Length: 358
Image (tube, rainbow, N blue to C red):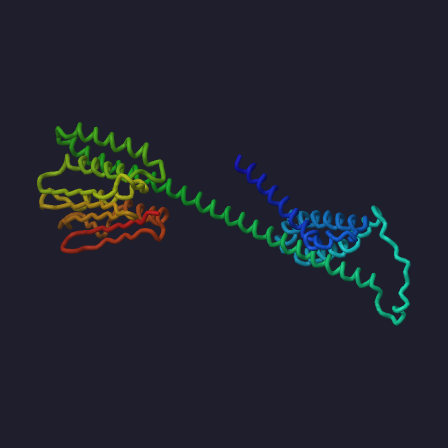
């Protein structure tokens, strides 16, 4: 339906453009046409009609065939030769056909003052007509060629952008598919540890995991999800992790601002939260994980800070596939509209993420 409407609009635009083009000579001679003594011969009318028909045919022959088949394929010599040939045809064929339709008026008057070899007014008039026809021909040629080249360039750019978008969407789908097994693998390991010790927290943990899985499988198929859903997801994940933690670990999570009015790409924050729980807690040492999310007017600020636990896996050397994954997704979803930094300060590992919203 959209393509059909676009074709209808294009046809109407072409008809309007040709109508304006053909009306120009009449607008120029309109003051003279008001004169009662002004007359126009049938031959001149036939010539104008034949010229206009030729120009219309030339325009579409040039834009629909010559440009794609010759100009775009860099057959410069053949293209230039064809245009010059059509110009010569234009100077003689419409006039010849018009003469067959309506014979030109024959003037038999002789000017005795023209015996010195000066050009006849009729010849000068024909020369002016030829000059005018050449100008009109090249005007139609120039306009048609420019429009056709620009249209084909726009189509090429649209195709290129569509291919790039398709590539981006494919890569994003692949990155999302990587997040799910990575996330489930870590979570199932935690539940497995609870099951080994026959903890009473195993059943609630399974229910919480079920809720998280439902969110990932249903909500994250969209390019954008409500920010509130991501906040709830982080809350559920933290509660799931807390079933296996001891009192040596303290967790702070705060989300504030206009959260309900924002949309965000799904699963951008959870890899950083996972990373904090994976490398920032210990059964032997006290540790703290602090997570803050602030929804500003045109941006979202997300911070995660956790203790660096000695004698544990070195998180600075191994951040896992989740972090690299989210970095790539940020580049694809928010190019030039995000800032991601991570640094160590006062024996804490800090992640700072800012996302500008359009």
